[in-house]
Length: 528
Image (tube, rainbow, N blue to C red):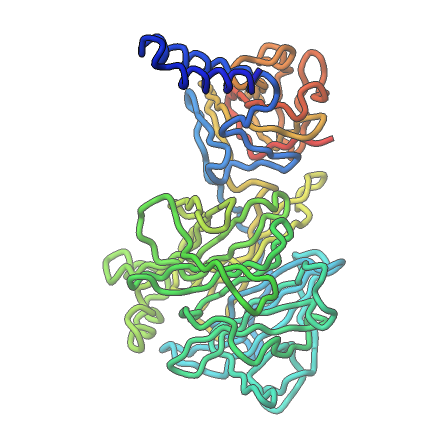
């Protein structure tokens, strides 16, 4: 029918002179519409705007679902809950400016790498920078192993894993930061199962080097030449193997129009980088971003999430004078004014392509209640990246652990504090008791059931409807057919009067229509 319709259109154009123009044009339009309609009904439709989500978990952290809200429903950014101090940086080779933590699970253990560095009361450097290592069996309790690799003050009894040294043809000097990760590339050679980005420079050239290790402990240069030179790099730069896209991706610190910003690129070998681009945001708010903290979210690896540290110099005011440890703050300012009056905290952002991000301008992690060791410049940097750990609540599901530094500048040590968040709990669709709802963009899915990560009050309710492309409920999957959903869980199948089996509509183009009262929906997933 499609071919016949197109042939008829062509013949009409050829015979146009033999018919009145208006009749000819009307027939052509009619035949085109009829042809397109027939093509769509044949099952070959391109479904313009329809995306294939397969069985990937869907979060509400960006605009991918193009969600349309009704009633009182809206997106809500959530904030991690404060927990215990995980690690105190109080060894002589550590100190008051230890931060830039790299944290990840590796088999049965958790690894952490961080800067050992001290600054005195005026901000002066007290000892050379080193990089340190800690381990944990649960991601909550950490130990500093005695590695015996590098000498500090005449002794190798320490947990230093990397320091400035001579590699023969390469004189390596630590400048600001090191970021370590386990390479998930299945083709990574045995001597480079772990990789690191290292900031080292010979003024005036700013350079980023690549290091490798077979065990995460013993390190050597992957290349004697820098892998990047077009940046500032004086903050935690990040890189990883993107298993979803089969390539390495890197994010680094640079300045754009005197604004602290983030740049990205991709690579197949971790040495040669291409597709360079500035990280973009849909909002227009100018923000100074120190770190980036970007990583694919392990429960939905098609989504990049990031926790940039945001910087602002507030200057002296009555509120600045009221913040903790005023005399120490004044003392630091004698070296550099911003050491007194600049403040930092972390925000949250997400992306599906790694370049264009939805940036949440409200703080994700605030400095918190005023107390000694808080509200200082360079604190609240969230460690890279996040861990799944056991909950402190008996019988509760696992949760996300996030780590951020505090107590910088004001003593001989600094600390890393743990925070927690429910799985997928960055952003939710929230609706008040008065009710609200949303409708997603059209998509195709793979799976036999639909599961939700949600929370309601005792009075709250969620109802789910599956619609066709015209917005009509698919028979058997309407709001009226849905069994009311209430509770608080990270995984609950949706059921209708006919049950939860979606085999009959698997692979078809559909939308989700959800109505909620006094509830939060964090994520959903189709699976078997």
